[in-house]
Every structure is written in C-alpha cells, then in structure tokens.
Length: 64
Image (tube, rainbow, N blue to C red; front, side, top):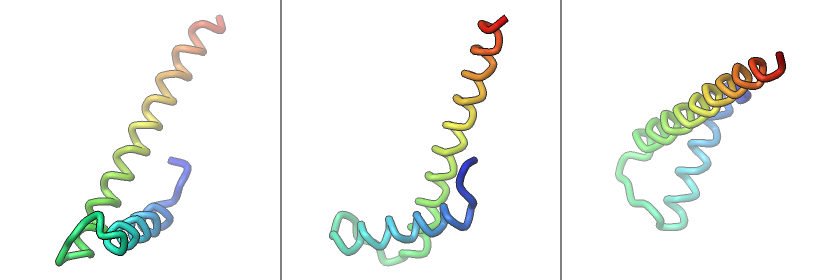
C-alpha cells in the first residue's frame, strides 16, 4: 500500500467531516463513520495492490 495507515485515517476523518458539513450524510456517531470510511479505503487500496500484483505477473510472463 502506498499510503500509511495514519494518512488513510486522516483522509477518512476529513472525508467524513466534509460529508457531514455538506449535509450529504447524517450521523450521531462520527467516530463509527470514521472507522467505516477508513475500512472502506483500506479495502479499496488493498484491492488495487492485488490487481497491480496480478498485472506484474502477467507482464512478466509476456516479457519472456
């Protein structure tokens, strides 16, 4: 993963704060929302890492 977990947590907090301020979401528990957004970001970035690894394997096979 190219981002640290601290930075991902920061992005999640900022995203949640923005969405609440823009009244795009309502929540009584912003801490729980931060945790969920953090988990979603980590899942998406991990998926990107897996796809990149698969592409590397395919390209290495085609290189030979």
